[in-house]
Image (cartoon, rainbow, N blue to C red; front, side, top):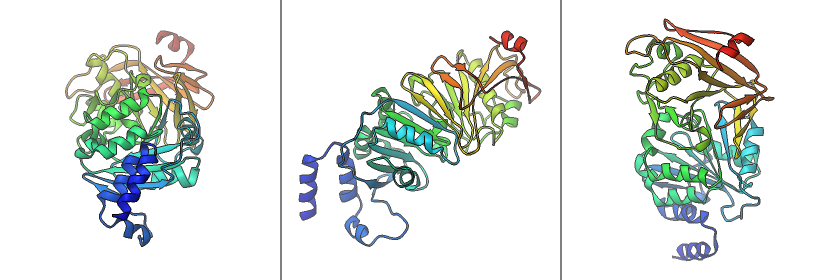
Length: 364
């Protein structure tokens, strides 16, 4: 009883972000006090709820030190570029970060708090069931977050657990309220207006996607997150390393054949991050592998998108966004591109060539 009296007194003085954290830590996991004093060397959840595990580090009661500003951090996967993460931390006012994932444990929150630093606290929810996306304590924690980061894993779980839920609404509202949101790998894959959901349990290759852009593995998802700056975009990760240009071309061609006229593809290389401020101006952090962002814009209607048939598509503009480039969203205007190429899809193959001045003019 003494514990609950102390918790009640703390809640009466604490900011709203403490509500979920304190309740989770004290009420949802039997034996949490004992675990805190004699826990295992491997970090254990502070609490467990119906369909999730919860971790935390830092000072949940600390006031957010600086103003919070809007921003999107799109990480291609692999090793994060710390400069980009520091950019997001600054946008979050050096305050309170919440990490969402459906596998793993507290790795990302520990990287935010301990390895990179500069945040008041970091919390993690690891989801295992859709019902957790309606849990009041989870939603209260997300509502109070200064910044939210979606980790890697399997984006099909994010679609199944979050799409159409109260948590989905909270994520949209978080961005509308001018707070930063980031994602890496699978977390990046769901940030666009359309996503490759990997709903068949696989990860479609460029070869398969080009061979049949209407095939069963092309599980594209819409009406999930609604981020205004990415309203015309489908994102992809691990881009050059996993040879995903062909599949992103096929994603865009498929969507355009279904009437989504202005959609473009945005692929991010592994270890790179594209950071977008509230005015829609993007800066690329190339990371340890000197990566790029890749903007994919077909300039002509698909010549053929038919069941069981390879994609036929001419004059796809492929623009590289490097450290010295600037991408403006949502208009998809690129200043100082790192490279410009023209892609053609035919007979299940993608041919990429340098964009000559004449070719660039023809695709504008």
